[in-house]
Image 1 (cartoon, helix red, strand yellow):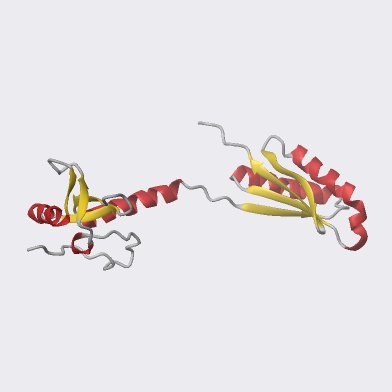
Image 2: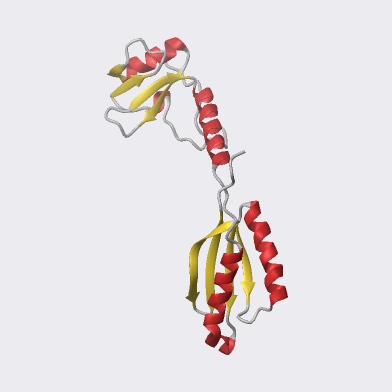
Length: 186
């Protein structure tokens, strides 16, 4: 008698869709795993009998293979390990934050220094900086001033970050991206 020990979908966190035990409808499967004496291709009914004898679940690991690859394991423990791996991968991914700094084409020295200090702080925290000059009305005539301002900004931030994208005019905005330099090993 083959029984269904674990039911996928019981847990709302069950984001993995593996077929187990009676849900596997193919005639033959390839058995793999540490607890299998003779891994290889066998009928699905044999594999389920073997899983039942071990009081474990037959889990379809790779359904697209020919024949599908199955393992005899504890399904709940397997799901736990999969979630744990996913959580570790999620922790390792770096979230990129983009901070914007806006200039006008005629930004004076004090405002420039104030915004420069903020950009230094953002880069030291590991955030990208998107610096842009916004041209209002006829100030678009001074696009060279805007480009000079952004290049000076990049030069002043040279030791903390590197320019990812040089100043580029898009409509009424001239934009430049600066990424933080890699942190030195401790």
